[in-house]
Image 1 (cartoon, one colour):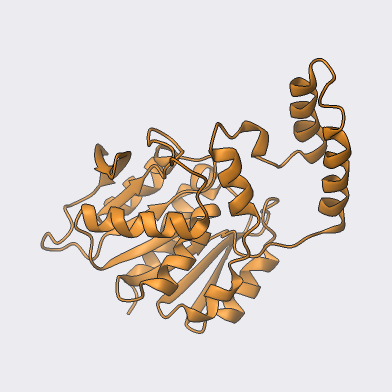
Image 2 (tube, one colour):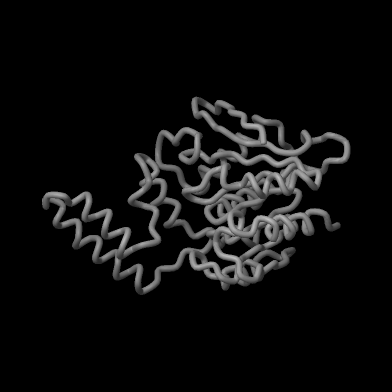
Length: 261
């Protein structure tokens, strides 16, 4: 894969490309891949190369705040990331493309497809973070966290706080987010994006692993119900990171969908 960079209003954005140049004879619309929270383009090399072997042009940016790209100057929302994607595709000359999003990137992709329908030829949502639910466990943890902050004067509070998130909250990325990305994480995690689903016009494939322990596979069926022109591909044995553990299966599902009428 080739690595490139573009400067968008002072924000340095790195991205990878694979396959034939977009628009070259024999190649279809390019595929834009949006990675998940805490991820980066490096984790999508295997999938991008498999797709490029089937004559697809693939573009995978490091979203701002991740990988080699610079962080936003203020805390971004999912909608801010959506607007960034539009600036990015215009800067590299993508006008009509296939859009793929994973987890956090899937939420961005869903919002983008609803706001810019003329740009998205087909949409693929993989284990996408769209619904936000306040479970009893989350409510309890919020209360505990507030009580925990009372003891911020205690020596080594910072270490204790990280231990709390690591061993009690466990799945939260918050304590590991640097600088402005902490507030960005809070904005993102608090946004329910389900209202955008019914506005999506593009033909959509929803991919999920049946062993996903981060976002339940039940969300796949809920998304399928809300997007009128959608289909499901549930991958047996797949977890939340199929791009790392089963790239061939993931690529196969994408190629089959994008190659169909």
